[in-house]
Structures are given as C-alpha cells and as structure tokens.
Amino acid sequence: MRLNKLLPGLLFILLIYSCGAPKVLTNAKTEAETYETAGNYAAALAQWKSFVETTPLEQIAGADFAKAAKLAFKAGDSEAAKSWFDQARYKNFADAEMYQTLSEIYRSEGNLSKELSALESYSEKFGSENATVNERLFQMYAEISSWEKANEFWEKMNATAKQTENNLGTYLEVNKKLENNATCDSVATALLNLNPDQPEAIDWLAKKYYRAGQKRYEVEIEKYEQNKTRKQYAALLKELDLVTADFKKALPYLEKLWAQKPGKEYAGYFVNIYARFGDEEKVDFYQKYLSQ
Image 1 (cartoon, rainbow, N blue to C red):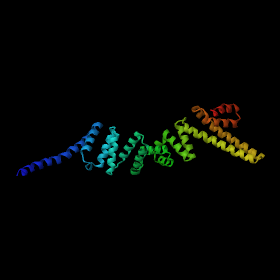
Image 2: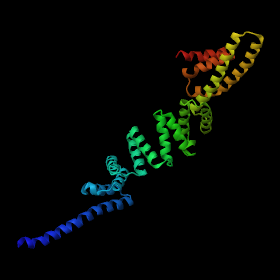
Image 3: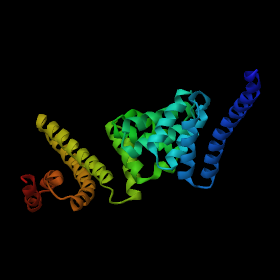
Image 4: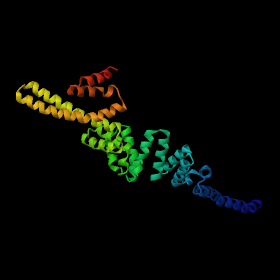
C-alpha cells in the first residue's frame, strides 16, 4: 500500500528530470551561440564545453561538434578545436569551413603535412573556387618540391594572386625546375615590372643571355677548329658579333646582381665576358674574387 502511494511521486520526479535535463543542455548551446554573436568568445567557449561535458556523446550531432570547434578556434583554444573537429569527422560531418579552419590551426603550429592534408581534403571535397586555398596549395606544393602539382594549382589561382611578387617568384622557381624556359622568360620580365631589383628575375635573364652568347661562341669556335678556311673564318667573325651582342645584353643584369651581391658567385661571368672583349683590366679586377 505504501509503495502504491509513493509511485505517483516518483513518476512525477522522473518526468521532471527527463524533461528538464535536455532543456538545461539546450540552454548551454543556445547561450554559447548568443555569446558568440555578441563577440564574447571566451564565454561562448565555456558554454560549449559545458554542453559537451554534460551531454551524452551519442546525443551530440556532428554539426554541433564542428560549430563548437570553430568557436574554440576563434577563442584561441586550438586543442579543443582539433578535438571537436575529430568528433565531427567521426560522426561523418564535414563542411568547407571545417577543413579551412583546421588548415589554419596546423599552419599556426608549423605542421606542414597536416595543413596540406586539410587543404587537399578541402579541394577534393569542395572544389577549387576558394582563392585562398588555391594560393596556399600552390605555395605549399612548391615548398615540398612537388613542381607539377604547384604548376597545376597556379592555373587555378585568380588573376590578382598571379600578379603578386611572392607568387610570381615562386612560379619562376617552379618553371625553372620544370625547364619551361620560355615561361621563365615571361615571368622574369613580369617580376621586373613589379620590382626592378628582384634578384631571381635578374639572375634568370643575366644567365639567359650569357649562356646564349657562350654557347654560340663555343659552337662557332669548334666549327672553325674543324674547318680553318677563309669562308669559315668569315662566318666565325659574323657569329662573334652576335656573341658580343648577347654578352652586352647580359652585362646590365650582371652589374645589378654584382651591386646586390658582389663576390665569387658572379665574378666568373664578368671574367669570361671581359676576356672576350679584350679588357684585361676588368678581367684582373674580377679574377681576384674567384680565389676568395
């Protein structure tokens, strides 16, 4: 009899508990979102932590874990952000912002491989319309010497990104490695239009004209050595004029490089050029740097 009297009261308490608990948990999430909207990320993070800690795991949606993780990143708690993003992925949730935020976290930590993985996942799942992602992947592939992939993502970059000195400098390096000489010529010229003192562009054009002259000289000398006739000698003199023209094109670039970095690296070019010109004084001047 006593038990029968107690049952209604117990059922009432259970009913209150079963209805009240989710409301409390829901309030924590709602308050977190309210604080976030107000820009109070620290308070929002505290509410998200309360929500996660007091809600059974199976009742938290992947989208909620992702939302909490994004807020944690804004609040400066990268560890909570990574943990909650892992939970979101475990629950088969993914959106573009999640992968981009993860990439930013790993970049701030200097974790190149995980940053690259996050950005590749973004690109594979959500396409190539994000200019920031495309530009970063271009730079990262160049950084790890994946030249073909870097070249691929250059094509996906927008026109604005392709006009920055940093990206053009990287693109010049990519095409050097891929031996796309004609592209290197145009990129070097574009770089010098942005910055007349850009060293990699100057170096490329200096060596382009120097090598052209040197190769022409070696080929024509060999031809003459094999056939020492008046006709061949006349042809040699004509070609030597072109050699001189190439060396004269190289000189202004080499002089800029020398002004930036005098020393052994470029001295040999000057020695060879001025030896061809018969300028012994300048040959002697640059020769001394070769022994340093």
